[in-house]
Length: 212
Image (cartoon, rainbow, N blue to C red):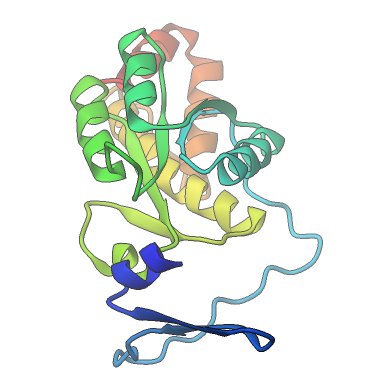
């Protein structure tokens, strides 16, 4: 609580007395920005976007990390987890591939932004999605999208898919140079899957393109 208040330019007061209990007041600055409308709710029964890419989850809170890993596995992703930035970098240095880095912003010893910069030095094509429970992290320019905590599985699924869509756009441009046009109705992932099925000789080049 104290860390959250400090990060948000707020203040915490404690009042306690024998027999009266303890009162905690969390004082936060008023948001003077324009009001934003709530995102539309997902209709019941709507299929969540899925994938099979490799997602590296880095989160120092064990409960949040376990929740994220389980949700992503249920969505079909291949998930690798790490409790901190140092462990994540060692995994990458040992040869662990990853399409997306899903990392907390505020962590001990190494922040999410520092981790992303170091990871991208080793995997230049790595996409990054940040997550944080601190308001300031969501508005400061840290070089990527921030998923606010707490989040549900549907919100996580949509943000992960949006971040990974950039990979397929890169692959689509590469395929276009081979004279393999994309149909107007095709999504990028469907297009790549169709081309790989029709032209297995390009599968190796596409795999390499993810880590160029």
